[in-house]
Amino acid sequence: RTRVLTGITTSGTPHLGNYAGAIRPALEASRDPSVESFYFLADYHALIKVMDPARVQRSTLEIAASWLACGLDPSQAWFYRQSDIPEIPELTWLLTCIAGKGILNRAHAYKASVDKNREAGEDDDAGITAGLFMYPVLMAADILIFNAQKVPVGRDQIQHIEMARDFGQRFNHLFGEHFTLPEAAIEQHVATLPGLDGRKMSKSYDNVIPLFAPREQLKKLIYSIVTDSRAPGEPKDADTSNVFQLFQAFSSRQQADDMRRAFESGIAWGEAKQALFDRIDAEISPMREKYETLVAKPADIEATLRDGAARLRIAYATPLLAQLREAVGLRDLS
Ligand code: ATP
Image: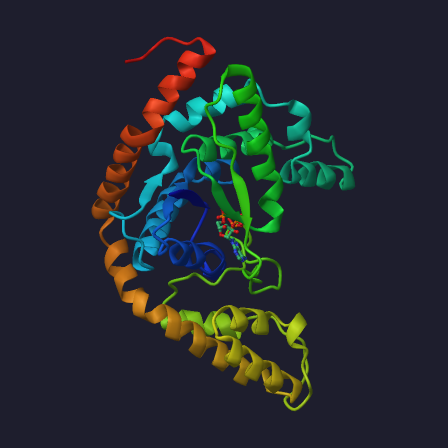
């Protein structure tokens, strides 16, 4: 079967972008019997951005409960927390020792931080941690430890998959064929959803619509989406509208075409937002009750995650790491 890997960083409350961009397409893909799915909570990655332990813990619970409420069946797919697999940081070190520093210098996230520093007249590396710099190596370990073949990503992540391929290939070249080289599966039809302020909806910005916000809050947030000041009756541009982009992610082709025409003929913003609320609520509310039950039982979630990680280590991570340790000349731990 083709191994497909999807992770969400435990850096905050999961939002509509995580759902439409990762959870929904990943669960749809897993219905194909030729796919072996790996879903993980990227909590080591969260530490790069978040220094608030309570937030990381809360986010872990919320993201795990979200996957389950949306239909993930832990008996049919691998579902685990990154930090429950100690082989991942160990592989990270093995890869660190062969990863070209020059390649990491070119990673987008690192370069963007350097550029920001330059604009502000600061030293290139001011305030940049080694964690941010090394993030592509940790991501390569996430993928290579399970020899995942496909990693569905947005365009901005293609570079990181290429780095994982590069590190895997280099390791194979030096120490023998241990890794299958992963491929990025570009999700052409999955759009990046805008947040309330029009920037990318992101846990790191204060602009998200939480996936399982209670109904009233969902409505309030949708009504607070930034729009232009065109009055009712004035034609509106669907392509540049945050409201339309969100609508499109939660509706059929037909419904989106109808809404596009309504924009052209001047639908009032209030009316468009009400229609958006109706669409999102129709899709989310059947899962919301399940989410609320799950999130109220952290011990059950904890048991599910630990069980997933324990089985996965036995099946893949521990034997592969033993093989890798031997390949590089480290002691046999068994
Ligand atoms: P965030 O900024 O919210 O932390 P992220 O993109 O930095 O999100 P992750 O939490 O790792 O990082 O994202 C998990 C998944 O959710 C990824 O597949 C990512 O592409 C997807 N995703 C995140 N934000 C959006 C968005 N606004 N629209 C569509 N997909 C998104």
